[in-house]
Image 1 (tube, rainbow, N blue to C red):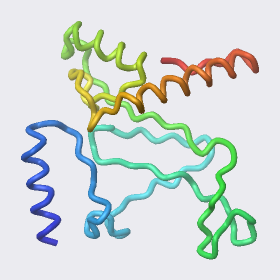
Image 2 (cartoon, helix red, strand yellow):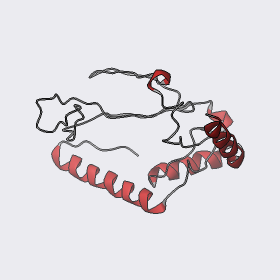
Image 3 (cartoon, rainbow, N blue to C red):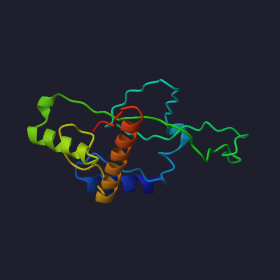
Image 4 (cartoon, rainbow, N blue to C red):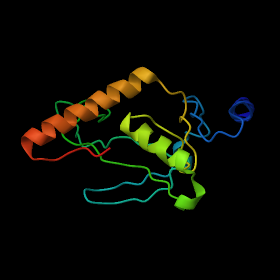
Length: 157
């Protein structure tokens, strides 16, 4: 619709060259199932995706209509176990990033901050929320603590 087009034109102007823009959940044209490519992966499958391009993810639905955690439209309301492990990666030659950017990106990972998908920048991705970064850091610390008690696995930062 023209309202959506003008909305995105306005948003792109506001971004001033930044590379992060959330999609309006009411954008019926962009979210039309005929315009979406779904990569249906099974256990052990691997997909390599350039994180600088449009992407999203949704957990699998492994419930059936007979499952007690399923609604009438087979939407699973209880996910058990590991849903997915994913990491979006963007790489470029190290020579394109300054030492300051590299140090900043390392510190961002250590403090659970989310940055732009461009490896030669050290800027927040979207609206950075300090309390969410702090919560994520505590989750990683807890996973490391539990992993070390169980089987010596660690979540690497």
